[in-house]
Image (cartoon, rainbow, N blue to C red; front, side, top):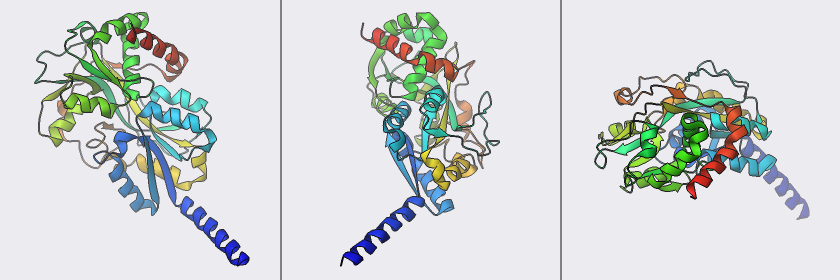
Length: 331
């Protein structure tokens, strides 16, 4: 009986190792894995290619992803972390938990170009204030008009400590207002209905009519035009320009032991993945698609200027800028 038990235990352990070798674990954000998000289609397409099991583990938003991986440290189960952005790359590299991807990124095309040994872009977009044309006839035409506008017309934003759009707005304000950002936040606070942990909660409040404006992306109206056949929700074009977000995936040090991880990153740069992005994640693809984008994408606001603060400057100042935001919000 003891010999049988030992043999059974050994067989179980061996099976677990084989099963683990056939599984890829990807940490990402909740809207990516949602039924309407890219996750289900990406999972089906990659599993058909690899003959493996792709498992998504979701948290609220992009900043929360980095917070989770940092907290887990070397014990993380993630092979790939998908959903960070350029504002977080320096902080992510500093954890020592990410490795060079060693894949060909020649197919990647993003504004300003791309060259990074650790992170691979999969989409990009521009932050924008989305407004409800049935609640608001004259949207703000600039960040200044948003800050100084009617306090009765509210906006829902996201928390920069947990959300990449929230962090994007923080940096957008800093790029435009510089040392006066704290004062601008204090003035804008009267227009903020609430601050949510992630994008999904904020956009849900907006579409349910709780506020006439929400922080989102210039591409968000494409969803409503294509999926709902309505132009009710539009992006406000801001004269100062719009802040760019490039979304990224990175290979963890744990993932270097799983050959499926680099296979996934290479897959991510091709049409099988990129075709899914425009009409599920509602962003611009970072690689070639097999078909042209829907004509709705040509109707979107085109930023007059692209705003982006380099990752090193963001990391050196992020905590101070978040503290400035917290102080302004509490006045």
